[in-house]
Length: 505
Image 1: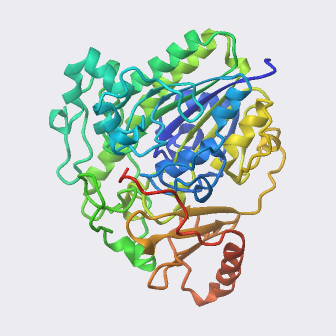
Image 2: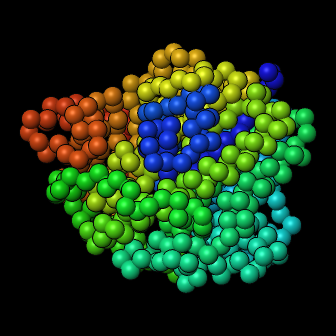
């Protein structure tokens, strides 16, 4: 085993933990991630401190809460000069590279800002000969956005224009082989051939890096933009699951009646720039206008997207094995956040920090990781950076981090953490700012800027699916008050934290 292990991180976008076979989903076809969990460790109680893409992804590479790294919403950047995981590894002579969707800058920022992860940067021609460095990654192969933006900016879009321009229109719903659905226009079968799909391209670029990296220890970050909506995988993945076989979403009739009333109507106001609808982050919508059949089809398409990702990540793992590097590599699989996918009568993501959004998969295997084990230790994306630095034997130099190393958990010992704290920063409606404490038994969420008595209190033992809000229940006033005092003391509201809002995304 190498003294300085390699690090390979697989990331997905908007994928719930319960979508994987190794997390108990009997319908899932995720054999490669399941095999990774079988020879490593599965974390069953892992959370992101923020359920939105950019804040969560910035936390992964800084070890900081969004209020501390500055990217509290999409459309912002992190504070200048913050140390990052790949940057500290470079200082320790690691070779660092990232492939796919990173989403560490606003993707609609004006081209004059020269942000490499913005579409206008590429449309202005700045990206033709650029490949990094980027937030500590010495080189990158970028893909920007989800499926409909895949052709507009980044190295993947440039590759399409140079080599396969005929594929570009095939990503559009107008070219769909099946769908879009009448009552869910985000669900269709893409006409793009799998061999030319962006998930294939991402795996190909990762394999190219492994072929060329040489003898230096490396960190490779591989990130798919799926299964984020729209639900539009190509064949054969779109046909892999029958909608009739999909379990119905977990909904208790009338459960939203006891929730803050913003859940009953969309939040929409005039927007600052960009030609796009003005909706709150996450695009949360109610499913009452979507038929059961269409919802089931969207779930089946999502399972297909996840199966495609697993297949192509498996190709990267096979290359790692063929090169004889598996035993010397710490391998991680996770996602930035989850997705309602019909649970609670909701779709996508949004302000309420339901477990569907904040609990994500976290699987590790490799040197120093116990084999074939699982843990319910209360872990967080805050812990990724300190854990990997310790495993790599890299001194963090005493920099500020909000997370802890999980080295003890990897050896089967306890994690010293009594509670986790979550936070949602709105982009357009200050009322929905919320901060949260999660203990072993309870979740309490407060909305300190609301003009009503909004709040959420869930008994995680008796109601793990979070269907009965006890915030206004007199019988639970004592626990509510006790948790409120603790939350306000240890993670006080910070609604004005964050860097400048630059663009919608």
